[in-house]
Length: 138
Length: 332
Image 1 (cartoon, each protein chain N blue to C red):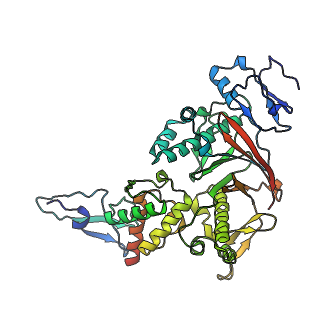
Image 2 (tube, rainbow over the protein chains, first blue to last red):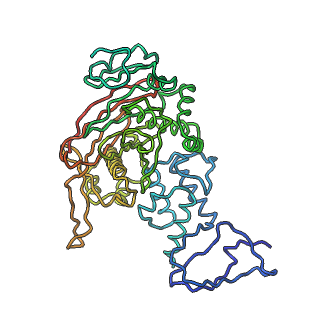
Image 3 (cartoon, rainbow over the protein chains, first blue to last red):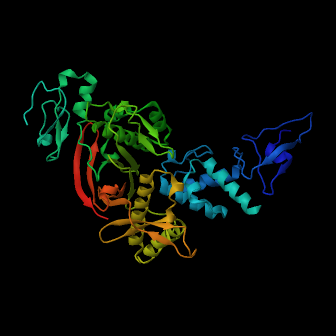
């Protein structure tokens, strides 16, 4: 049975004390002689923030989309996906900042202004949110 | 100065801008700019394409030092599908693709008008020959600010900056110094509480200033004005958002105008913020079309420190008409 890789993988790695998320861009399943679990041994320490595009939770993407739609007063049926750019929806910098405030309230996080203003897509927002939640709970 | 039929290019001075030239079949002029230079064209020596651009996009005198030219389009005034089609023919493929990515017809139209405004306006400031707006090339500085790639396309080195809302698209042009502009609908409603928003993003002094305004509507308007001024500064600076987070500088409102105060982080007493309000940047805040606030920010040229900024505002429909709105000096 195919399982989402991000939930079935177990890692053994020499990492620094901070938690590191390691996930692939798309959920895929990997089978190793019929065994569904894999272990990784990493040869070198992973930096605290790994710059790999992560598969974010669908739930996060949906919550972000809701907040974006509300801020920009979009119709309920307006299609907003992970890859949707805020500018394509007509958001300007003031909208982006208000969206960030909405996200901060919803998820109980605080974003640095510079990073917040650079958020271009729903995916970016979701990734940043999950990273900040991780840091909070680490 | 007399017009000579065989004249081959060049500039002449005179009050002829307001007069209709025989070649101006599609050009409407509603204003007279006294003392501006007039371009004498030898149309017979030009190609069909150049002739069309010369007629339909009359050239402009460059902004002088300390001057910002502010152009704007009201999308509601542009309805002709043939005109919009003509505009789309001016765009590069990348620009056309970006217009197509916008969600919805109105957003697509506004994106088209924004690129049209930039290309046609800049093309008109070229002093040697009529420039095809399509031929202009743009690049980004190392922080991502769009700039005219003037070296690669043999045109005047101008600075420009655009800003738009649903109902107004604006472009600022300067020659000697970088410029940043920002426009906002005066009636724009903030979905969060204004002071909560300000405490989160603005400087302490700005929050204190806003807190003294008791009428919520007046407070909201001041908030919007501050937003446009702060955005205009960051855009003029052109170094990306991280170079000037909003809470590291204050726009001070004085009887004479607006001033920039930078909060220094390096201070003997960590609880005290030292502020430097000695300028370095000029600001102007205007109202456009009775519906928008527009902020303009330019770098203060050391030679001009303290001198007021002159702003010339024109409303335009490219290929159709210009309307002079105002010429005003803004002090600091």
